[in-house]
Length: 83
Image 1 (cartoon, rainbow, N blue to C red):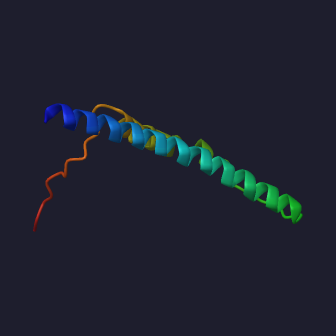
Image 2 (tube, one colour):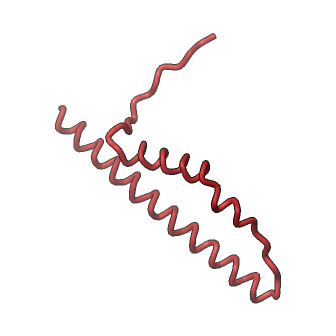
């Protein structure tokens, strides 16, 4: 039973990592599509590139990635506080 659970956890970790990679790639594709469509319509897109340099947001994303891809990731429900 332990081996089955270990195999399942490994499969879930791999699937989650693969899905995150697809999400990142699709985000880039969507941005390319938006920019191409704006160019065809002679539109101007203004974006605050400072947000891309938001190191706090980048650090939070890195923590999330490490949680998901690291050994600490678990599918077990955590205990919740009840009032």
